[in-house]
Length: 285
Length: 264
Image (tube, rainbow over all chains, first blue to last red):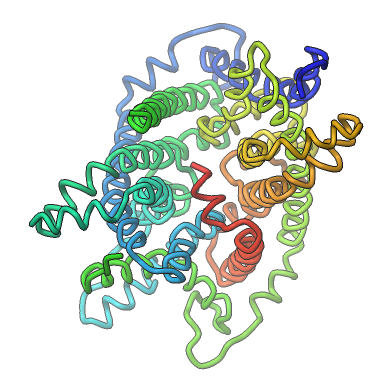
């Protein structure tokens, strides 16, 4: 179809979209990087002078370091729990028969399409001081526990939101696995556990790794969950940026933190691409 | 096919309960007749659904979000189809870079995009404009559309196009009468997925909406940080119902597992 057509055709076809993306992705990001070097004065606002002070402040002030540390810790914990729940669940799903298999796959990954505000709100109702979890605890004769506005609440809700991103890659890896291989291991005398550990696990470990990278990246930049379940005091990186922009009005400092989040995320995604490439190379033999 | 043991099934039941718990609780609490967040046991009431209509700001945000998602998804399809055609069918310098540019919003956190849009709009004096908000949403949802449209181009049987061409059809006629009908499922699926993603978007929008252009998720977020009452549950239940309906359509038409599993 390309034969006999002008070499300019692809540029006409993709041009409008490319212009939009250059103007609304590349340009704003460059402007934000520049903004993070601007001097900020609390009375006069953003000044036309440049400084590294914001980066220095973020990396030396214990307040910011504490929030970064919490962000990494909670994202790491969320990733770990997602592996521990998501991988076995994907394995169980893959061993089900249709129609149950399709139905439950839909149940597990469908919530991906429900707004994260809605899901966060659901958890704040469940975990609140008079919420269902505390009512159940009291009904069983235990003392009520404070869950809402704690790190526990953030992690529970993050796991809920991120679980599909772990189940999907593990599920995809399992689909490529011939169930007969596992059966062969059994018939050669391997126990169920050994077959799982030595035959199934190596095949899905790449799926688990790529799922982990996505979950970690998304958790570390999550906004709605820490915003609604962490309250005003338990901040993570994204809610910190929001506060700097909307409440402190210190845009250069907010931009600095946003750029740090972006760079960290890009590093993770590059690692993710490496994983995918390794997998592709393995598949080719 | 091996069967799952009782421990596996128990684990599975717990996971499903965990996944559904917050959604089920929302849908139950939405029907409470009480003033507090409680699960109705004896009587059900629609009072909190009626309460939504006494909040014109919520209704306005809902209408605003509907328009925004419809326009953004449509524009995104209008950009993605020719772009996918160019990337799939032509060899040209910068093709890989172009593809990477179109998919880049997937690896940039929405938070960073929101901050970046805000800076641009502050500089060009476009803060609070609905048109620019639509453009922001187009950028965020286009990767999803592009991937589905590209997938349907890749899976296309080219011989029908060649046959039409041999019979004297022009390029435009071939595209309109042969190619377009074949990629229509990909386009429709992409449009719906884009619509849902745009309708649900919070983190980027919260930076670039003005009081006049507040979307429903942003309005809900603001409301939920101030106070929590059963009306939030009613609004959330409506959103769950809307999403479930869109999911059913997507699932019937393409298989939701294919769209979502292929997504990442």
